[in-house]
Length: 353
Image (cartoon, rainbow, N blue to C red):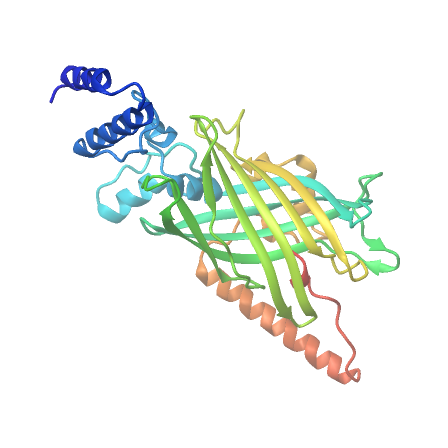
């Protein structure tokens, strides 16, 4: 049946229907349209309007590929070429948006809750790299550090009401990202991303990362995290939400991927017990040398122990080495506490991220 014949039949059917039954006419038209779509292999509601396509179809982007490339910098095209043709691949090829390493740098505030009073400015970054496991599984090696600054003078806070203040730091973290299920009525290009913590000073349950289109050139990713675990310092409860924005033009100079992070939970160790709220805005850099100069100077300061953060962890061998050092340090602290009749050590960052 041709399209013109279909239109003629529809018109003829409409003309023969009694005027007292307009609702039946509409039902028949809908059923006919559904039957026509089905005969073409199209779901009744899978195409929004004739001549239109979804944003993912128009851009031929995959939400899993887009997220892991944005978050870790991994060059999936090159990784797949190496995996499929280890002796025959273009060493100089580079996919849009990819980078050997990435740095997510930003700043925000730590608020007292529920008053909303600003306790401190927060500034820091995350350094990451990606490792290809297979087409549906990417591993992220990362580390992060955040400093607290005086909200008025912008000076680093090293003491607060007689308590020592140290930056919140995670010397290593390893995450696995795996391809999830479709979130858009069966569109295979728009899937969730399933994260898990493989290695790190603290292991927490992760929820799926969900993508959403914002126009034809932007993808939004939401990463919720709800924590309710027991630690050596007691129960730890918090929620965090990471919101990423990716411009598919991959103009990293003028429109780099950006991040908004919100958190409510246990305050950092230098504060009394209670809940605080943190909000943080940042974006991606593709080299340590691209970070603000004052951050580079702080990390490179020979009197501090931050040089580790010039780059993300290289591989699992480095992670194992760092773990061994941490366990050795904890053992020494435990022995020292026993010698001082059970004296307590300083609070761990395990209750704050």
